[in-house]
Amino acid sequence: MFYKKEVNKRKLFKEDSSDIKEFNYIKTASTESYIIQKSLHKIMLDYYTQTKYFFKLYNRDTYIYHLDNIIVYAYKYDNTPNIALKSGKLTLTWEDRDFWAKIFDPNIDYIEGNDFNYFIDSEEKTELYRLLALNFQSTPVIKKEGINYIYAPINHIEEAIYKTLTKNNTIPLDQKIKNQMILYGFNFENIKEKLLTTDGSFYFKDPTIIDELEVENLEEHHYLNLLKSKKDKNSLNRSIASIISHSKKNPKKVLEEKKVKKYPEKKLKYRNYDNIRLPYKDN
Image (cartoon, rainbow, N blue to C red; front, top):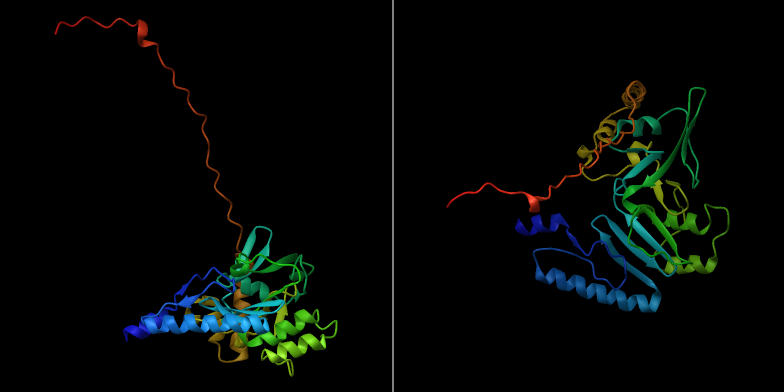
């Protein structure tokens, strides 16, 4: 039981490192486990010198694939990136009711672009939102020219690589690169169109397709848990309508920073005590 408890913690050491030579390992209650992980790391290093392919842990929920001139950050759960909608100073995450209200707004549209992704353009309002992966904003990588950096769900790596290399299906895939990817074990046949992308680098599942989202500890995500709990389409639609309605009545607003009032410093006046005569006292 103690061993299982330790393993379930999945505490990763050197989790901020993405360098190939840095050894990342999961702490367990067993010394043998550490030795095995260390040995596998050395085997992978030797394999990399021959093939330019390397696989390693990045953190407890994300793995890194080094594929010659492609580096893929493959995440296990759809909540791992911590997706957010950002408009000016307003940031909406999965934990905000208004995130789901915007996503399910009947006037919402999505486009791939660097300036904005989701937009609402109706007679009532025009809103622009940039979709961000907050947890991938500061990956410790010094990006090198000629390298494609990709962030994608681990079960849809092939689709993300294919779309990146073909610029989202606008150019043919180089056969030499395709053959190399096949040698690494990737299969580009029968790719399922499951992913959206912001810029051809970060890929994610459409959050409106609730059934497709896979998360760890679902109960911690109030609104997603609520929507996933609905057994039929009618009850799901009623919940969505309720979320949108409450969001319109009381939308989330940017919290203004409280300005601390600064008072001018008082200058202390010092008296010159050198010329002051003290009263005589006979000890």
